[in-house]
Amino acid sequence: MTLLAIEDLAKTYDKVTALTGINLSVEAGEFVTLLGPSGSGKTTLLMSLAGFTTPSKGTIRLDGKDITHLDPEDRDFGFVFQGYALFPHLSVANNIAFSLKVRKWEKARIDARVAEMLSLVGLDNLAGRKPRELSGGQQQRVAIARALAFGPRILLLDEPLSALDRMLRETMQKELKRLHRETGVTFVYVTHDQEEAIAMSDRIAVFNHGRIVEIGPPRDLYKKPATHFVAGFLGENNFLSGHRADDDETMVEAFGTRFSAPLQPRERPGDVLTIWVRPEHIRLGPAPGDGIGFRATVVENSFVGAVERILLRTSTGEQMVATLRSEAHSEYKPGQVVECRIDPAAIGVLPSE
Image (cartoon, rainbow, N blue to C red; front, side, top):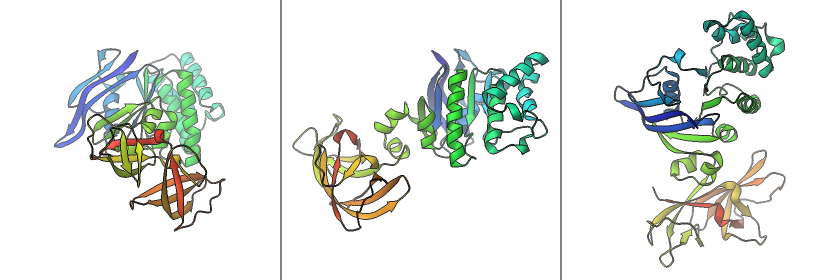
């Protein structure tokens, strides 16, 4: 069931267009992430949902009710700020209780709810501490507990993990997924981190220049992007030039070889195409196997921890990266000519920009 509906939303500041033509529906209980580079409009949309920014055009509906111009405190949304925004003079327990006191809950009910939220975020033994006495991850848990305490219909989160180090960020990603699962609250989450979006979301709305360019489950967007921008922005990718062969409706010529690929009906013989393939889908070595085979020259071999990145140059002079698991230690040296193989299903074809 659609809980939140955004219809033809736009926001303009003087002559600068921050958002245009935004249409997005969010189902009850979903975890939807707004992903995009800085300045793409994702935070402007979140602020519009919260009521902190007034759209120039369009409608925001909650359960079918128009809330576009409703005050923030009347929207029944929780908000987790990027900088946490905790009250420094209040204890953890009182930070969590603040929104409940504003709503004039009875003391016994407040105490019970605060205890419940402390347990939910694992801070039972830190109730009396002040924010300055907490780590970044603990402060983030307090901010989340405070935002969830009054039982919001939707929780809005504005890049809440950006200030945390990598290990803590990964831990908090798991915590947020657990909280989403256990509370059943709908999450609308803003980030510019592609890995974070892929790991946490039910669906991702990818923003660029104030528009949603694609929306869908993470796996679909990663494996079958429909636009150049998403193919390049969501994960590492290799882009190479190719063209449709003149003598066959499905044949493509690229990186020095010919292969069959799913082409759009509008593609005509000789049309220039963009071919993409993820680095992890390029296999190296003489081992036989199905797929598209071609030769390439090793330019560089870099060890980067879990994988080795092999920079290759094709016979057409283009460069591409292959990633190999580090435990399969490679002896590939610059200048060495290697056999390459790619599963045709792992290759994407887009019209040339």
